[in-house]
Image (cartoon, rainbow, N blue to C red):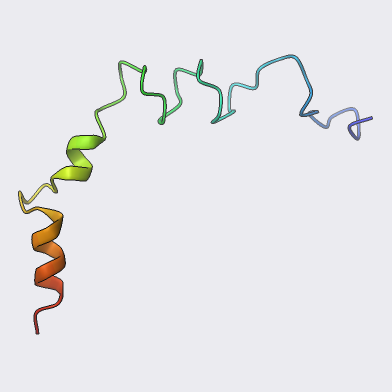
Length: 63
């Protein structure tokens, strides 16, 4: 038994739509094949202000 009748068992054959690990979930923000998902790498490599993260780290150590 997996618990009560209303408890969703982890061994259920039905895919849970809210499962973040489900690659077939179109609403999954971490799904790289999602066409509506904006590219993440450009955001990680270049902040909106145009400065590189290395410059931000150097500036954060300045008095």
